[in-house]
Image (cartoon, rainbow, N blue to C red; front, side, top):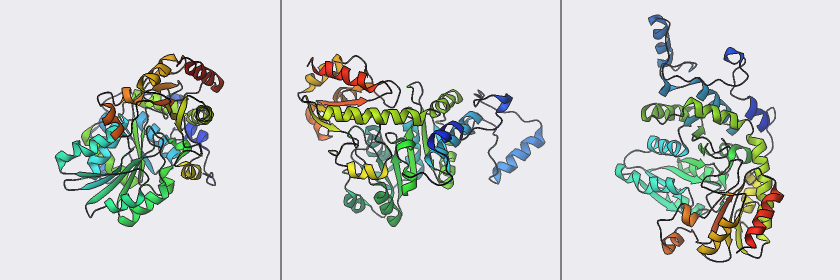
Length: 400
């Protein structure tokens, strides 16, 4: 995507956006304001604060930690700048962000549309948990835009999806989905965790709300849990009220770690983009690999869409080993650099077998019904030297 005129580049924003100048105590970095409550000089100070808040004034301060924190606010401002949003709102986790959005924008009798390749826990929440509130969800195949539109009812309030998706890296035509939502007066919500604001910015394509699990690429070091929602000032103001009520706030220590991680976001993601494309090409040419799923490859079903609306294709590569569950397990056990773990987007390369990591409780037949093959491997690349990663994969393939 071309850089907007007068808009700082992503690394400049990642380093400088959201920070006060000067910082308190003349600190270079945003301090951790570790407090649960805030004091007032006198009752007149308190009355002025309440009056200003009642009339929608500045949120430069608050009275209680659930309603705000200076460290958290600085990181929210940085994330809003990176995503091109009017405002951003931090949560304790990505799922806390998603569930708060759904609970806040849906009421009893409402309906939503969700794609079948959206995050597994999001689908479960929509299909199972929301039923207790008489909220219905219709699942539509990923990429079936006619199906999305056909599923919309008078009671439909949201279209929810993920792009790129987990684990097959399917990529939505964001302008097309946004146009359907606008025309049918339905809000669109995209989980852009795999995309990052470095590689894609859904709001620029007309999407209403963007959600990230900040635990992944945004934090970048596998040492924090956080989530964020980005969007218009009006929508975020509404969600902020719900956050204050439901309480899944991001604590200042995690906000500090997230803000620190964000400063190197563009550098890390660009390296992961390079590693992802190199490894995907390597795997696609390997005789022991049946298929590779990576949007940077022409063989991927959404390559043309991804090439149009993404600036990079990310660090996750999913592939099918020639063989069965045991073959894939032997490959994973044979690698030396990647660590067996869930999650993605950190500096370390992680590897997992979705059939065992996320769908262990299901039989092979049940896994196949949701598109998870026993020989599927997800490789979440870090920032290591790609030649070392390829050599390690090669020696692992030699052992199966």
